[in-house]
Amino acid sequence: MKYLDLVNKTLIELNYKQVSSFSELIKNDHKKIKNILNVLNAEICNSTGWHFLLRKEELTLPAHTTEIDIPIEGKIASLIAGGQELRFTGEFEKFFSGSKPSGQYSVFSDKLLLPDFSQDVTLKILYYTSNYAVSDDEQEKPAMETGTDATLIPSPFAEPLLVYGTCMRLKGNPQHTRFGYWFNMYKEALANMRSKISINADETPSVRLHRQ
Image (tube, rainbow, N blue to C red; front, side):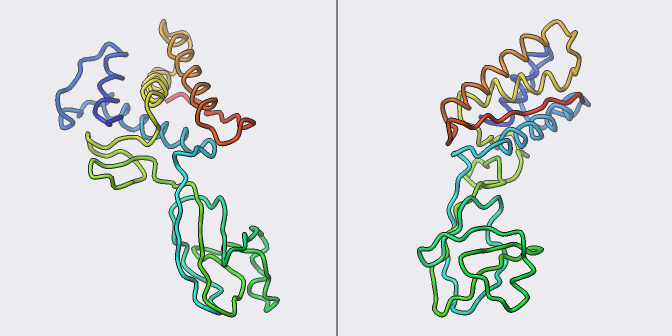
C-alpha cells in the first residue's frame, strides 16, 4: 500500500483533513504520522521470519577465500557453500587462529568468515531483507520516503496494521474513545497475517505499541 494512501487513511481515522499531495504534509502531526508509519512498518516486518521478506543472493567464492564483505542487507536464514549448508557460530575468533573451521561460518565487523575451500564454490545466501519498503520503480529500500513508496507488508494486512497501529501510537491513551477499536482491529489483522502467511505454524510474533 502506498505511503500517501496510508497517511490519508490514518488522517481519516483520526478525523483530520486529508491531503491531495505528499508535499502538503507539513504540520507537526503529519510528520509524527509519517514517522510512526515507518517505525511500525519496520517493527512488524522485523518481528518474525515473514516469507515475503525472504531473498536469495548467489555468488562465486574463489578458492581459499575465507573472508568477504557481507553481500546482503538483512539477516541470514541459511548459508550454503558448494552444496553444503554451513552452521553459524559466534566464536569468530577461531577463524583467525589458524584452526580452519569446516562446516561453519561466522561474522566479524562487516565481514563474513567462511571455511577454506580448495576450489571455487557457489555461495548461496537465503536471508530476510532489512528493506521493508519499495519505490514506485520496484527498488527496495529501508523505509518509505515519498508518497508513491509502498510497504512490503502484503495487502490486505498493511492497511489495518499500519493505520490502526499508528492511531494508537499517536494518541497513546487507552482511555481514548476509539483506542479499543483500533487495538482490536490491529490485533485481528496481525493474527490473520500470522495464521495465513507465517512460515512456521508455531511462530507467534508480537509487536509492542509504545506511547509516542
